[in-house]
Image (cartoon, rainbow, N blue to C red; front, top):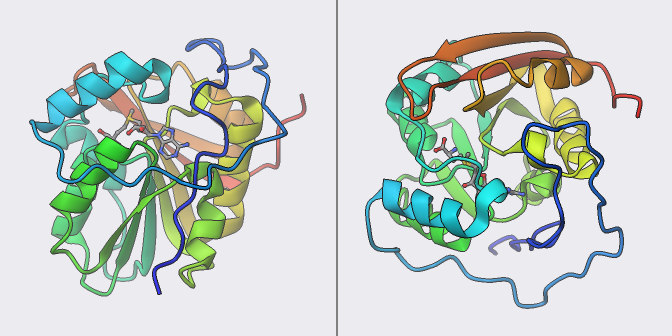
Length: 240
Ligand SMILES: C[S@@+](CC[C@H](N)C(=O)[O-])C[C@H]1O[C@@H](n2cnc3c(N)ncnc32)[C@H](O)[C@@H]1O
């Protein structure tokens, strides 16, 4: 049986903190409505990846956060150091058109399960089309703030690493906390939370509020230049 897909935890119209102002407290709607008819992923959307990302960015802005897919340099940097000989499960949140997924697929053993979660139906349609013939990749149209439940529904209580392309600094604080708290509970001993950014080092302090150790890897060859935070040792939710 196919596990259920979920609808966004917060409506697309929920106000979010302005980019660059992570401390601003955006209102999170507590009385969330569940859409009984979640959108299906768009069937094999047409056009190159950069065009799908650009369109998504122009129509959805902060929920996409980047106007271009990550470069292969960014994709390689975020997976650098993963021990593919031992990795059993990896989850990728906010996969866009799949540049990072594609780099993982090149390295992962067939036994390593890669679960990919994307909220946007068009981008998810591209992912499903792109990885249809790759048995160890499962693409889910869903909300990454619920990724713990999505993994459990597939019998995956722990993952080796969580890779995130989510625009976490723009998320309402409660949604960001949900992602990072779930990551802390889900990552196996010795694993990491890895977050990409196109605003190098700007959010270092934000991630340090959640994690004991945060390393930043700069990626100049990306449009725009960016980098990756590699985080270990969850400290608990930051005090408000
Ligand atoms: C900056 S893009 C990164 C795309 C891709 N990882 C890459 O490197 O090119 C952010 C992605 O997160 C997705 N996203 C935003 N909020 C999400 C959520 N709550 N759950 C799942 N995906 C989400 C967006 O639709 C978008 O594809």
